[in-house]
Image 1 (cartoon, rainbow, N blue to C red):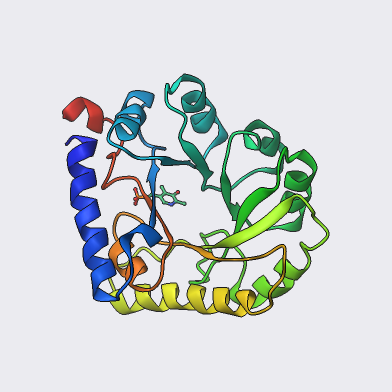
Image 2: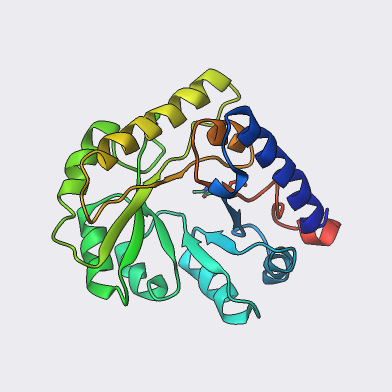
Length: 230
Ligand SMILES: *Cc1c(COP(=O)(O)O)cnc(C)c1O
C-alpha cells in the first residue's frame, strides 16, 4: 500500500473519532513511526504530507536524518540510553520517553535549546514496559524544576497489548487524569498539554480519550519489507 492511501484512511478514522467526542481533528498530531522501514519509505511519508516522524533508536533516526531531503520534525519515542542523548538532542523536537532523573540531567546538560520532553508513564504497570508508576509521576516532575533546559510538554504511555476496549480506555483515561493533576499545579516548566497515546491498533480509542499525539507505524508506513511488497 502507498503511504498516501494509508494516510487517507487514517485521516478518516481520526475525523471519525474526533466527531464522536466533539474534538477538532487538528488537535491531534499524527506521528509516523518509521522505525520498521527504509529511508525511501520515510521520504514517501513526507511526500504524502506528513510532517512528524518518530524513531525509537538513535541509529535509525540518524540514518534517516542524514539523507532525507525534507526536514521533518523528529520525535524520539523509545527507551533512551543516557549515553545516546548527545547523538540525537540537536535533531529532535520532542523526547517522549523521559523516565528517570539521570536522563533528565543529561538532556539538560546537552540541550541546545529548551528541550520539550514527555514523561513516559507505565499506566498498565506491566513488567515489560518502561516508564514511571502513575503514583510517582507528580513527585518526579516536581524534581525536574532545577533543569532549566527541560520543558515538560506532556505525558506518554504505551497501552497494554490487548483488544479489550475497556482496558484500553481505562489506561488512556488514567493518563489524562494524571495530566490534569499536573496541569493544575501550574508549574511554569511543565505546561503538560500533550497526551502522547495511541498506536496502530488503538489510536481511535486514544483520540476519544483525549490523545493529542498519536504514534502510528504499521498502519501508516507498514512494517519491514512493506515497501518491496507494494
Ligand atoms: C513502534 C512504536 C509505535 C508504533 O507502533 P505501531 O503498532 O506499529 O503503530 C508507537 N510508539 C512506540 C513507543 C513504538 O515503539
